[in-house]
Amino acid sequence: MMSTSALLKVLRPAVCASRNFGVCSPALNKATDPIQKLFLEKIQEYRSKSSGGKMVDSNADIERELKNELERVAKQFDGGAGVDMTQFPAFKFEDPQIDSITTTN
Image (cartoon, rainbow, N blue to C red):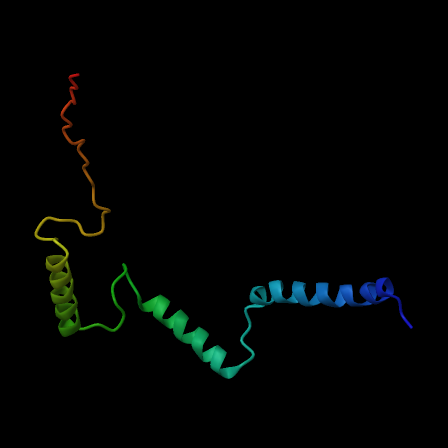
């Protein structure tokens, strides 16, 4: 019968090897599955089509709809002409006026 320490010596390299393989597998960057290969090809195709942060495969109708939706959201959340909705709002807190308390005996 094996002792616990002998069993750990046998199992530890297998665990280490599986962890190292898991870390290194993205570095291989090879698609073995046909669906995975198709997915990677589509991602690379979209990356090559996108330019300047614009939407891929858009037309005038989609651009107009996007503009209308952004205007609606800006109006709903107190944005308007000239308001940059991508900036975090600036808060201004003022200390309240406190009356002094006078006590008389």
